[in-house]
Amino acid sequence: MIKNAKIIREFEEDLIKNERLTLPKKYRIIEGLFREAVALGVFPLKNPLEGLETKIKIARVVNSVSETPVKNRRPVR
Image 1 (cartoon, rainbow, N blue to C red):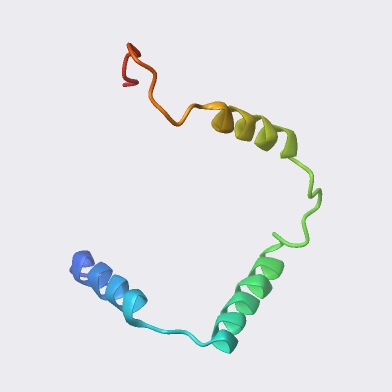
Image 2: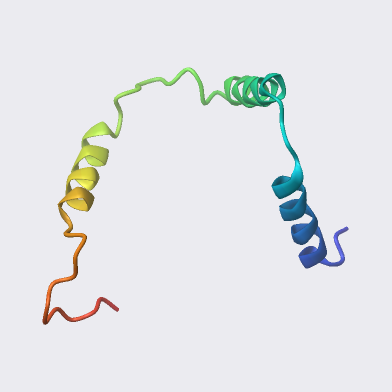
């Protein structure tokens, strides 16, 4: 049982910052994640285009937002 989650979180963050992975090790991690996804039934996708239309609509809205603020606009709360 974890008694102090903050210490564990700090340890993990420090480990991630300082650990240097080689390219072969990165490939082994990705391969392991892929195999786990296959075992869980996530891959291969049953319908790879499912939800694509929604994602395109969201992307259009996000990309249409001006990067510069408009004067006299009320802040969103």
